[in-house]
Length: 254
Image (cartoon, rainbow, N blue to C red; front, side):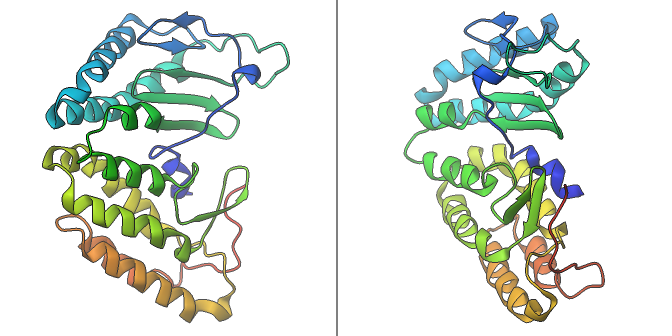
């Protein structure tokens, strides 16, 4: 399902160090369980340099966020192209990953999981930037999106009322965040809203369709307040449970 791809953002899973092979690359800029090419090392070093000056201004912080987001795809490609490392002493899953100051990718059973290094972002965000960082992390909703009620190892079903607090936080933070930070996150927000508004696997039973429609309408009203980004997705949310592709009492992938 398209929702499974949202494990980007958004994105992601934290694996125990005890369950993974020991890193084969370690530095201030990059930790990786697999050998990565020099080009990725260079990108990681740039990301680390941006992190170290991110607290000096909103513009510097925005550059770090944008760079971290841009790193997710090449880091993903590099991890997936690398030779898998030996499994850890107590693990035969072959799970592995790589981390920079701002981005992390893990190749785990069920797919690749990508995320920003939210702890590092929070540590250098200014008071003006911090609310949007927190709201974006909240929208991620523990790996699967704030609207997802996890029912399997790989995802779950759409429960609109779960998304409302996260959407309210995001809408409020979007209005007051520095312009450069909104621009840094814009493509990510659009992609996440796309996944949410295409997710027609609803947890509730068919008899609760009207309740779901009211909940979706409440979410749509919040999205409508996000100038320049929310209106198209608000329209899609309002009709999401009424079309023939909507499924109810749905468990999601897995």
